[in-house]
Length: 146
Image (cartoon, rainbow, N blue to C red; front, side, top):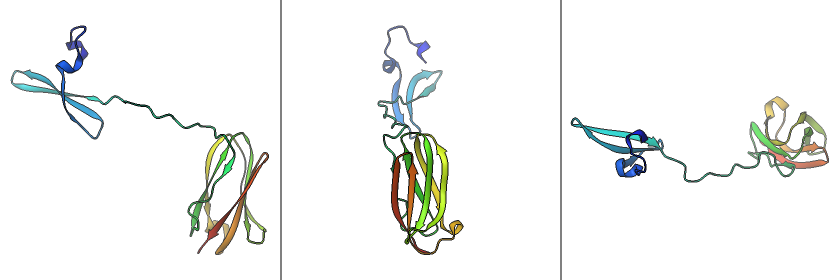
């Protein structure tokens, strides 16, 4: 398109925009040649750039499972600010260990762990899940309703 312009010409003086689509295109009128209207489109240029969130969390964190209470499955999100061996275990209301969900070396970042109650053989009730990594230790409560 710019090859049709003389050096120093302003783009919008030649190409008049007339519509913007949902697909992010600006449609413009080029002119008329041999009785045919010439139309074109260009992508919309970004007007601002959103800052990407940091890829490495600032702290260790164990988040509340979601959904809670849950029926068949739930998700446990956690963040690691540094590499280390991560263990996540589930305990019953009396503190008896039910299952080790995770015991792996992980790099810094955010993770999501899917918990399937049927596979664990859980019955309705209150459970606790604990995460340990390096010097970090956190416990949260979750409620399973069958």
